[in-house]
Image (cartoon, rainbow, N blue to C red; front, top):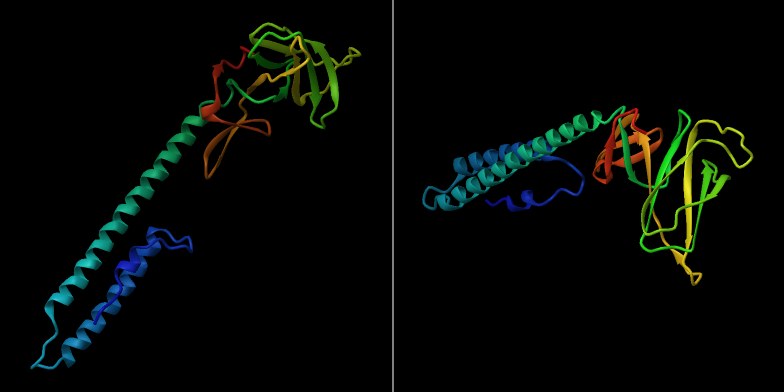
Length: 224
């Protein structure tokens, strides 16, 4: 009598976790013991069953059981880490954060952006666009190397106030020889909530998701 115990240690592509693996192991163990009992009852006294084989089978069961227990402990640890990360993310709610990205929420009369030039530019154009991608404001920006901040007051080019909501900044920089310069853009906004998925918690600025490890600066809510 042999059972392929080692196959039970292979990953289950059906997506089952260690709890279902433990259940399957218990069922297989019951089957094994039933077969073992039946074989012991019906074995030939002159040719008894090899005790080494029985011992090997039991050892394999024990090894698989230990591995499943380790997996269960690891799953609990991962779950706790996820809960701790989410709890930590909640502390950001109400704070202003700065992170890479060109979109933020215009509210309380301002929307704050930043852009960094890797080299000096001949011209820099800053264009604010609404959620639909329509340009609502355009102006020139600073051209020197390094990071620059730009705060939009919510007025379009005609001096008309725009409604609160999501707006993005398009930075177009050109070198003296006419070649384009790629600017790194960041945005600052208030964290209004936390959303979690398989990749961990994300900070929400309205409907804008920001990964926590991408946050470069944290400010008080009134420090925008």
